[in-house]
Image (cartoon, rainbow, N blue to C red; front, side):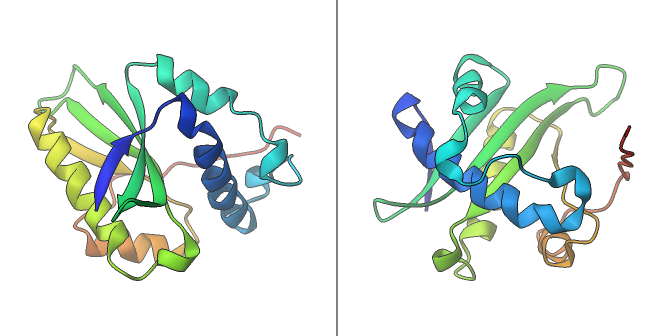
Length: 155
């Protein structure tokens, strides 16, 4: 498994996979409702902006030359903390037909190695509160709960 940095040529693959991830998150909160009917309706502007943003990088998850998912990483720092430099997993998606083969675990391990190579102090990731599978996956990967994000609609 390798992580291949996405380019402009990969925007369609990223959007398609993001759409699958986003629609899978819809049942967890009304705030996750997607406005697009299908992936072909989703503009690639968000991922295109990532190409220009130095703190965000999208990678294709590639196994034996085949793309099986994607991951979005964001770097940042909290200068007031002793451990200030972090790498955050913003999105991670493995295509349904490739799940339960260890690719998600391999992605996390590769991201951890990248974080160490970049002299980061820690990794972060978040998931929906009621997504028990994701919470279990991240706990099994060595992540510990640190804080809870609350959201409230303004309607």
